[in-house]
Each structure stands twice: as C-alpha cells, then as structure tokens.
Amino acid sequence: MEFFEVVEKRRTVRDFENEEISMDIIEKIIGAGLKAPTNDHMRDWHYIVIRDKSVVLQLLDIIPKGISEEDMNQLIKDWNLSDNEQQEAYRNAVPKQHKMLLDASVIVIPLLKQKTDILHPDSISHLNGFASIWCSVENIFLAATAEGYACTLRVPLGNEGEWARDVLGFPNDYFMPCFIGVGKPKADADVIKQKDIDVKERIHWDRW
Ligand SMILES: Cc1cc2nc3c(=O)[nH]c(=O)nc-3n(C[C@H](O)[C@H](O)[C@H](O)COP(=O)(O)O)c2cc1C
Image (cartoon, rainbow, N blue to C red; front, side, top):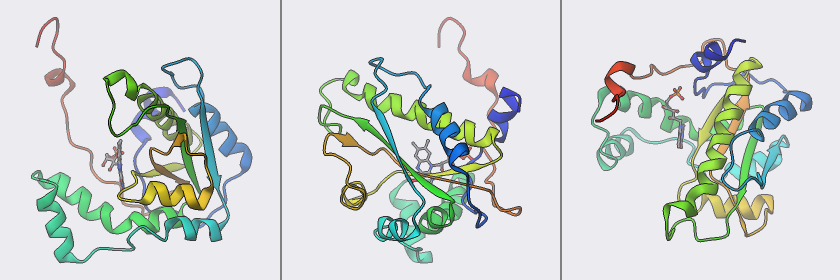
C-alpha cells in the first residue's frame, strides 16, 4: 500500500472479527514500531503480545464493561466535550472500551524504560522516552493498516497500569503508555468521522 493511502486508511477501529493473526505479521508490525525515532538512540522498548484469552480476561477485568446513559452524559460534561462530533465519537468509543480489547486478535502492551517520575517530570526532556514510544505506537498503527489489519487504543485510567504490571509481570522501571488491540476490522465496523481540517488553515508560514 502506498504511504499516503496507509495514512488515510489508518483509523481507530473498535469492532473486530474473531480471527487469529499470525506471529509473522505481529513481528512485522512490531518491527515497524521498533523503527520509530527515539530520544536516546537506545529504543529500550519492549512489547508484551497477549494471545491467551485467560490472560486477556484477567488484564481487562479492571476496565468497565459499559457505561449508563446518565454516566455518559456526566462524562461529557466533566471532560468538557463541547464539540458535537467529538461527543458522538466518545459516545461510540466509551461503551466499547472493554469489548474492543477483548475482541481484538491480540493485545500489545508497549513498554518504555522510564528512569524519572513520569507523572512529575522536572523538565520536558524527562518526557522524551514517553514521546518516543508514541512514535513507535503510530508506526505500529500504520504497519497494521498496511497489512490489512487495524488497531484500537486505550490509555490506562486509574489503577489500570499497575493492575497490568501485576497481571503481566513487567519490571518496575518499565512504564506502559497504552493498551493496543490489533485485529481484522468487521465489515460493518464503526469508523468515526474525522474532523474536517483544512491544512491551509493550520500552517503558519514564517510566523503565527
Ligand atoms: C494519546 C491518545 C489516547 C487515546 N485514548 C483512547 C482511549 O483511551 N480509548 C479509545 O477508545 N481511543 C483512544 N484514542 C483513539 C482516539 O479516540 C482516536 O484516535 C480519535 O478519535 C481519532 O480517530 P482516528 O484514530 O480514527 O482518526 C486515543 C488516541 C490517542 C492518540
């Protein structure tokens, strides 16, 4: 697939077929993740790939399986989601947080080595490792798309990161930025409309 076609086709998918994904494809996709730019040249990243549904169930046990209409309305208020399209996107995504990861063919947990307190950085450069792993995440999304698969993503809320550490046994000096689900999109998978943005309005030549 041509590069700009991959960029256009890469969309967050939350409705997956019940289908296996080969280890070769997983290795190819994560290999692309390992080619991302890196702050310190080391790419000290690891990826836990979870295929075993009993581990998946344990890992996801902490994630809410749905949300009431009332709580959804409250969340929209609390998170100041004022844009109509944004609200629709959240109304679609929030109830699927558990199922999208359960139904994905595999869950990938990227891990970065973090030497300083990531939640209380002394300077922006202390977030370089975190920024780098997100470059890796995007490469994974693009590579999965190029291979005919799609990804979903959840940033851990509350204790979900610590829970994942207990379930998966990764070391204390590694930090998990997100859960990634990879799978074959259902033929009728919801793909939420992206906001229309005119690139010309976002580029500021020479000065803002
Ligand atoms: C940093 C980051 C955090 C995100 N967190 C979540 C999440 O917790 N749950 C979820 O379903 N999607 C999450 N997403 C996916 C976004 O909802 C999605 O990228 C956005 O709605 C745009 O849709 P698109 O990816 O199809 O273009 C996240 C994406 C990013 C980049």
